[in-house]
Length: 427
Image 1 (cartoon, rainbow, N blue to C red):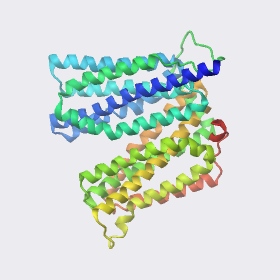
Image 2 (cartoon, one colour):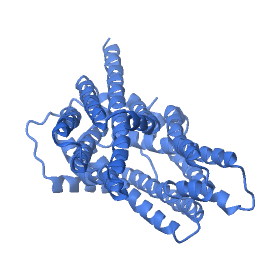
Image 3 (cartoon, rainbow, N blue to C red):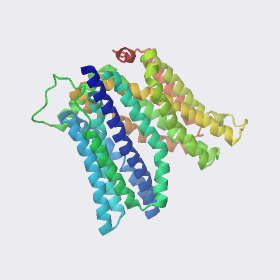
Image 4 (cartoon, one colour):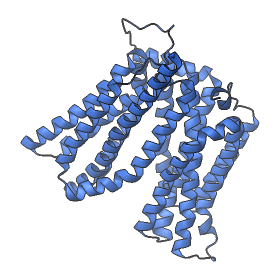
């Protein structure tokens, strides 16, 4: 009877988590797209447009380690709900303020910064809390659900954001998005955050926070745990090489070199999140059948092949194909990349959530996320600069070969060794 009761509570947690995330993520995705175009229309300045985008990224990188400390030290449920409500209250307040002083650029910047701070604390708190709201058997499921929701929103968000920007006053959508955050907070309020929490962990009456000391402890823990450190290094190298070899060169190749057009480019870009969705749906079954350390080696090879393939058409210029063939070719590459990324990201998140103790989980994961996100803009700057100096096919081809060589050497040294394979814990 107790098992049935826990099962029902767990399913309820999954439903509430999914519904809250759908409302919050879709609202944020549509808002970010619409507000970016609003700034571009308001100012006509690419610099203002870039500043708006940076205010959605830089605070996240800088604040993540501090958010990890807070998530480890305070009640995670209260933190998550508070951040959702603060996000909602902020946007509702912006809607009201805009009626008196108008919706100007300064208000956009302040809102973007504050919203990024709140969303960062929410995200770190939720990642650290996932092992407490579902059993270990469903931990990979909740990560897959999160990845699917993020991927669907990345496809539909810009589409819906374009509709909002074209047909609605931006202030109407601001208050709509604020209400979405409040609804998300209410759904989180109903989640049982103690479902899978170890009974031996006492609730802290007083909270002592020393950010420098606590962040250092997170670094020391990460350094001592070689398996977890190895996983973070894999994720960091993945982010760097994808940005270097795919994120910047592929749009340049499609739009500037091959001239496939904006419609074809949109379809090609949408193929990546579609692949992520497919990967998220099947990753658990695959990891139950194949040891993940072996699967990781195969994924590295396939990922390198996809990078190299992205630059291959420019090498064989004497074999021109029709725009339709090129479009189909790049759709397939992006689709495969999406599947591979899901196969890497979801099980690694599962393993870290499972292996890292609750009192270190927020700090360790936030430190790794910050380092990984820092490498992305660095790789993008390097890639963009090199595109001005060398033929564009060199970046995907060279990046793919270098990524393959680095990872094969890493695996050959025997550095990648998971103490507990995924299939043993999900059976």
